Image (cartoon, rainbow, N blue to C red):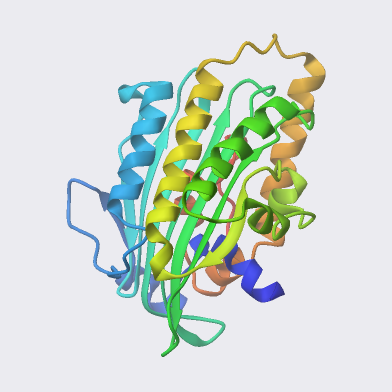
Length: 291
């Protein structure tokens, strides 16, 4: 189970492409150019889910807050990344990753992953992570995973925000005859995101029949998060708040680089760290070399 959980950050995937062929197979270009090559046909997550998240960030930062979208690709994987920068959200990134015909730990694997991470400029406001993936290893049945949560930026996130986030999920769970307690228990105490996760969301593995529930869950928590940061009456952050946010963002990056299994796979397969930085890293430092 430990290795299965490590695949939560599977967004940082690559293929068995050696350095000799990296330049021949890998390219980066604007979304206005060629279409991505490697794509899966899983029912979830899809482009429409990425577009919905973009509308949420646009509702917070404004339509003009998005930089030019970018893509990276090889013959067996592709990455599409978007990034919004604004007054409220210092950085809000989202990426869609397809691995088709590649491997994970030497096992032929197909994966589609959607990841989004939002980082408000105010350390008193929570960040937000949305991660959703479908993976299929060899001839096994596909497995879906969803992880949604708030990010505690200064280590003092109020219970009010946590309860609002959990209550939104609980409403969807009740509608679909699910138990949120089981989904939350699965993530409690795992020190996700370098112990910066608020542990008020959910983390679990699902099946194809759960797509409607998962899409509604993601949409509901994102709308809740949007209202939370736009309608916040939090006070002016102190110097201690800013120092705490700076340190916790460092902790998150260290966790991503040192403990995240997906980063290990990316190192093995020469994936450009710039793609991961664009949609995942906190807005504190640029991507580091994977070599």
